[in-house]
Image 1 (cartoon, rainbow, N blue to C red):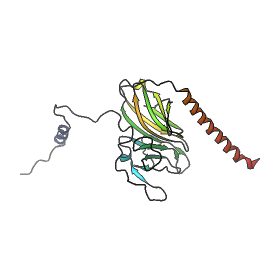
Image 2 (image 1 turned 90 degrees about the vertical axis):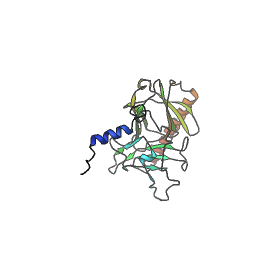
Image 3 (image 1 turned 60 degrees about the horizontal axis):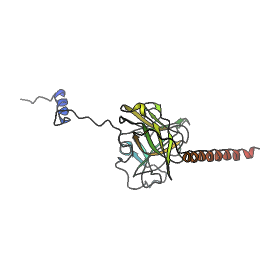
Length: 248
């Protein structure tokens, strides 16, 4: 007498039972955003790669747990397949990077995220992005994110709508930005951080949702940000002028 093979329905029923709580209710993964400070990284190399040409990859699923990393359209993964960079920017291709304390880029805690736009082999620009779907806590008024000084060309969006960020606090190596997310409060949404075009890049950390509305930007802080932007414009203008000197 041969034993009957288990039917798929029975197997599915068994798996369902294994996921039930003592009260008979099915448990599901949490819907809240997680790993917004990037401290959930695992299997991180203890030391920088000795490779002189800088190929020091990590599995994206280890570096950015609960996040999706990609270049270009959301359905495409970053150009390195399942890999992201570790402590290094790649020269001209898009980069999604996990920085740890072996680097000089950590904003807070043990890990910080970085994105850099780049180009493909044909010279066409490509963006770099990181995204996650989750529930924005009910009562949330603002999103806050710490972004390193010198970051440029970055975008933060929720369900495809760009969030207008304003600086609300400054530090030696980062600026705390905040944006209004009150209309998304209590609803499942896609959170996406991206950089577009050329050499745009962002280093960021400590994303959070606050029940506080966006405070009025400090006048001194706005002056500092404006001054830094002015210095950057003057440097670019000076560089452009110098490049034209031999032609005069």
